[in-house]
Length: 107
Length: 255
Image (cartoon, rainbow over all chains, first blue to last red; front, side, top):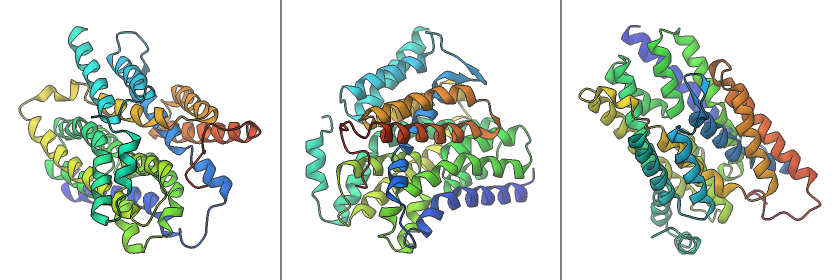
């Protein structure tokens, strides 16, 4: 791929990234979402973030890895427990990454 | 010291834009921290796949979407047609439309001049931060500054870490095998768990986790989109079915 094609691709990527982010905002003052749809959209963070987490944790090279020697899985479990116990996000992130580092070193 | 709700209440009491801006940055710090290894990983991956450094940086500056950039670099390396790459990026980014739609009531109060940068900076991280903030506090007029603080800090950090990754991987070629993506996992776990406040949220999360394992190998990440829609449907469905029983907490911030 030559540089011009690459640049055009990046500009196209910019467009297809920005438009979905902006379109609802551009229309925001024209109409209000019905309350039921607003409540439905309240589930977006839980749904999307959970799916990303499970995919990144368990899927590697197009295969599901649930063996106990998957350090990412343990990092996610520890982070989940910390967050559930009300530990701050900053400490949760640090704790999860620490667990991952130690396990990578052990396994 | 752990960030407590009490602390947040005090900070949210600030009336000045600058305080809201700084609070937006502070509340995003854990996610910024998690984005550092992720940004380095992206830069290193791009470099190791032979993508020119200017293009690696241009994507971070102009596109600013972590997952899409990873996928684009991977597809570039496998000589995928540019149109297919752009289409894939569009599909991966459709979740941002859900984010933006859920923030429409807040966006309606902003001028178009504000909506443009806030839309450009609407990442997973900033959306998670802003929506968490809105679960606790109403927008008293300074939400835009809070949001801007979160978005701009993520942006500067992302561009810098991308450059660092590309630069580091010249000397550390195996950087891409360090498993730096774990940072993203623990950060998202830390955001999701506190958001699970009632039974319907739990059903939504369990569904999302289950369905993605059935759809992860669908082409162009369409599995993520389908999974999200199914899980959202299960969540709102459970909520409507269990409406008679008292919820633990308000379902959304829009009431």
